[in-house]
Image 1 (tube, helix red, strand yellow):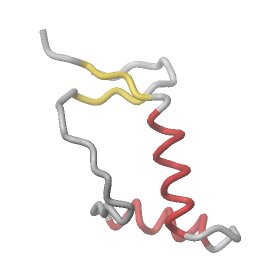
Image 2: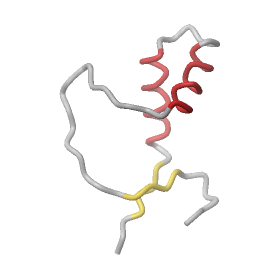
Image 3: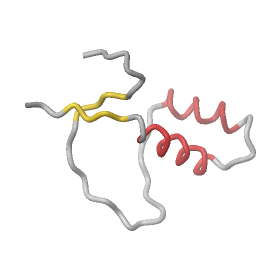
Image 4: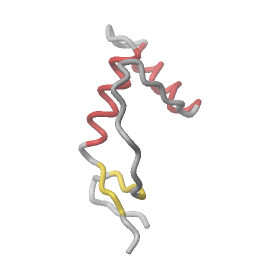
Amino acid sequence: MERNDGKIHIPARTKKYTNNNRAQIWISTEAYNALVDVYNESTLSMTQLGSIFILNAAERVVFDKEE
């Protein structure tokens, strides 16, 4: 269901937090290349940029829990 409320709607589930300072994730080729585009215009590391993007996007997420 598409909504035009400026939020990112995703289905909900649960995963445990990590204390690992070097946690890794896999991203799509398109997402990686978008990150490279920003990296090439920035003085920040890819790790810093990815973290900034994820933390900012997380504030816009709405969890659509099935009822």
